[in-house]
Length: 222
Figure 1 (cartoon, rainbow, N blue to C red):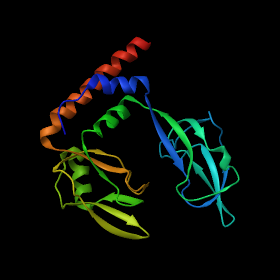
Figure 2 (tube, rainbow, N blue to C red):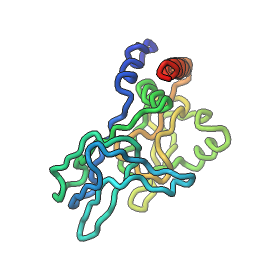
Figure 3 (cartoon, rainbow, N blue to C red):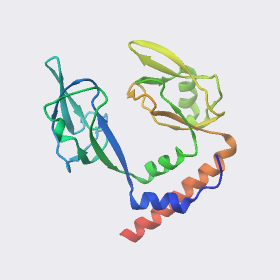
Figure 4 (tube, rainbow, N blue to C red):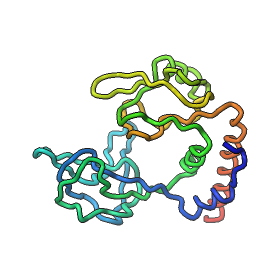
């Protein structure tokens, strides 16, 4: 990974289109009934204890068992496959796209994903840190935890079975954690972002530049 990054180009991209486009797909086979329209504003789960569910997006019925699927992110429904209304769909079929407005912190994370070593989920499952890693994170924070290839850092919970997941990326510290313990993660989605020690100054440079640039633009927009 080169330390030369065209900050102006990257930041220009996010200034012109400061959104993340989130595909919403069918979790399993079933008959679809949409509960939103194109252009609808949706909210993610909220509340102090995440007790307020997100906006209902659609209902999927399999074997006469309807299940409502709610939004996992806030934003606007930018496209909707309305032709699928009332039809039977396969698992994984794209139903709609939510245009999520990125906050400064999220933009930093998006840029960092291009610089960090991102360790992906091997399968769609629920994930937890191993007891040893979780203990170290609770004591000193994730960025004080070093990992190297072969370390057992994460437990994958699938079909009521827990399987250790061994890290196979670059040696470094856990800089970013992208999953929530016990919440299902899609196959290939990022679990953690690891930063080799010699790349830490570059990471700090990215964070400082984005914060300064965004704060300046927010002042101009007031």
